[in-house]
Amino acid sequence: MSMGLADTSEDIAEGLDPHRLFPADPASRALAARLYASVKTLPIVSPHGHTDPRWFADNEAFPDPAQLFIVPDHYVFRMLCSQGIDLARLGVPRADGGTSETDSRAVWRLFAENFHLFRATPTRMWLTQAFQDVFGWTKRLCAETADEAYDHIADCLARPEFRPRALYERFNIEVIATTESPLDDLKWHRAIRDSGWSGKVITAYRPDPVVDPEFEGFAENIETFGALAGEAATTWQGYLNAHRVRRAYFKSFGATSSDHGHATARTEDLSASQAEVLFQKALSGTCTSEEADAFRGHMLTEMARMSLEDGLVLQIHPGSFRNHSGGMMRAFGRDKGFDIPTRTDYVRALKPLLDAVGLERDLSIILFTLDETAYARELAPLAGVYPTLKLGPAWWFYDSPDGMRRFRELTTETAGFYNTVGFNDDTRAFCSIPARHDVARRVDSAYLASLVTSGRLDEDEAYEVAHDLTYRLAKQAYRL
Image 1: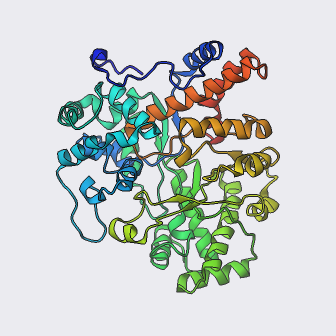
Image 2 (image 1 turned 90 degrees about the horizontal axis):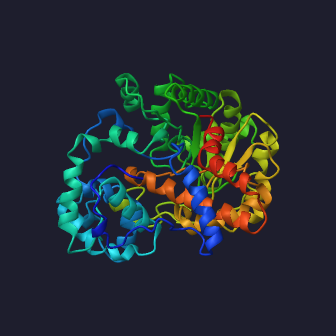
Image 3 (image 1 turned 30 degrees about the vertical axis):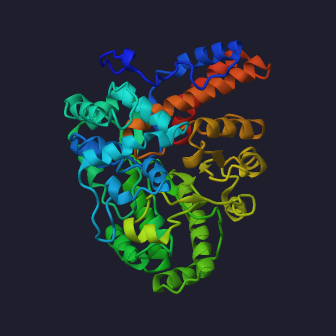
């Protein structure tokens, strides 16, 4: 992707190979390059992610390179933490009142000194591509180049063409979805809409704070939830009505999906009286862990039924043991790199939900996993038969070239391409979005080329599938 910046290719120390991620054999590599060329410039559809809508509402300059690339990105600081570097030294704000480094240049220098830790990781690839394609920085980042890189990127960030809306347009983004809690008033989305800007930034409904009895402040969250919805949310029916009201409010700001980040894929289909008992226990703080899990599971089925009413696509993101370190949770709060994949059951866990709504053709449920062993054994066979189910792309720890390749290899034989939903970047790191989509397009082109050269797919079909995986399937799956 060319950004029209000065060509300083002679300075590239770790230049990005134009044929990176393509097969090694010449015939497959040449075909992969042609397939990739046919989709390289298609618009980016980003139907699920965590960028901040305030960026696009205020359209203010990003503060500095450290605040853009390091402080908000757990992909970056978890690796540094693994080498004994304190998150506070990286400028990550503390939740316990302690102090963190406020000198962004010092944070950047520490990052640059340790950039070698990211060798051969997808994070290294995304960062390098963002530095080069977005900012025109073509030297290898290290201790010796840290200040020069900082100054170069900081100078770019001061220019109007590097503000959020301008970058949105330069990245060729057609639509981007953020993710908000039902307790969010969506004021930044309102500001975007009222500004008259043509960019399409929509929200998604993420009800975890009001469906998870183990979420901190659950009872207080329900009080706020009811007040926002104008419903008596401490009664079971009032609680369900509050969800309907808030979902409709989110739809008014473009939402086409809900998103559920549960610890497991467990679902339940309880009677109203059973659900009411669990709900009251949750409000009083007397739920056992088993009861809390059962309540979360039942709420997935309730959300699926609501999706039949209002058309929101249901995303299930299970299998993360979130905030694994209690000490880090107390010191820095949620989402600080200590979320760890766990084994996840889908066949038995999803059965109550699928018994209730699994054959509904107007319902769309997108399944993600952090347990790759489930792809061929469980997820592909489920999505390959139930009309409600689709497979989300390789996610989080597996949002990587090898993870994407494994996803295709493990699911295509049973679920095909058309029970998947293309690619989504699922990131807070705004400047990495073009690189992440570029990686997905390259990996899919390489996989399709291997199918053609091994006689499993006709070449004309490969071009059509490449377009579908890059663009059409995401729009179709997320009803965009």
